[in-house]
Length: 218
Image 1 (spheres, one colour):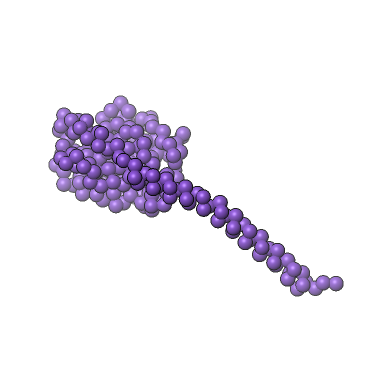
Image 2 (cartoon, helix red, strand yellow):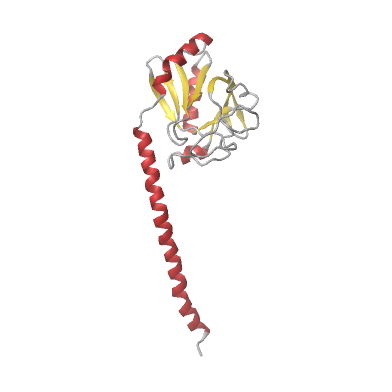
């Protein structure tokens, strides 16, 4: 008759082998995903921006409305949320000064790969079009933020929807790891960027005597 000690000794190797097997399975499952993610990030790093094609039109709108004609902010929603989707533009030199990530809303129909756009209250979706960057403020939920006034039919409810420019530590960390930020409460339609990018926007807005234009497109 086998003792209890002998039974445990007999069972232990089988249990240990099972753990090692699952570990190998997880590694070989995650490795292709890691390689795919690095490949996607590499592709978007070398892909040319579309920002330049909007410089002239944006400057003309700034000139007509009495906004700052030297600087603006562009958001290209055709690029992944974890890549350089948001850009600070120097319209005097027709150059890109700084870039950063920008999460899109997590409303119904959105995915990490594809944003859905809406102007409806309660949709929690991002909106396209021209926005006036309005007053700076602070809140207990998002910290530093800038209010936005929608200038087009596609974003006319921006103020009522409380669409803001603000930052998120989650966005600031995750965009280093993945091209497509997993949907989260970081954005319910707001232009949510990294803390570092928001600081650059704050510096620009603080120095400007005229309103600055933000233009979001896809």
